[in-house]
Image (cartoon, rainbow, N blue to C red):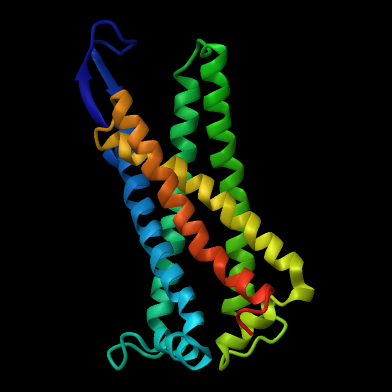
Length: 243
């Protein structure tokens, strides 16, 4: 809070008490939070995808990689501590990303007393629905994914000593519905990433018509590549390529 004098504002005498918004709660601050958390999450998605692809190198190599993740930081850190630190950071990043996006969306609606023209409204509503419902689907998938392949509670094998077998059992042909849900979540993630990447590229200065076309193309290529990297694993198991 700070003191200021303002002849036009309601006051006691000539002294007005106003509240100053924390920089991080301003629109610029919230956009910065979204950008930083978005980068953190995208880097994790890329690293996680590359780790998943190691399943094509064979059971021994994949299991070795999975066990190595539990030992990162040892002996400085106890076993599995790195994973819990990573999970904590990712959880904070996800929550901060969601809260920032929600606050910015509400402020944008409140600051827009006159509706957009019809075509613009359709585009904005589509993007908003994609991000909103996409976020819900992705959040539900993350919860399921943790209970399935991290804790093993929803995995038919659930053997922490055999990560390769857990993946194979999880996406087996008779559990096609798991692959279907996984596909839905990853495709939704793709839409989410395409929209977010396009916004990021535009923020970097690609705001001319030619620049926007490049930004859209780059965002689409990135989203498709990441989705393909994730979906190739369950479909390889489903079709018997990985067994």
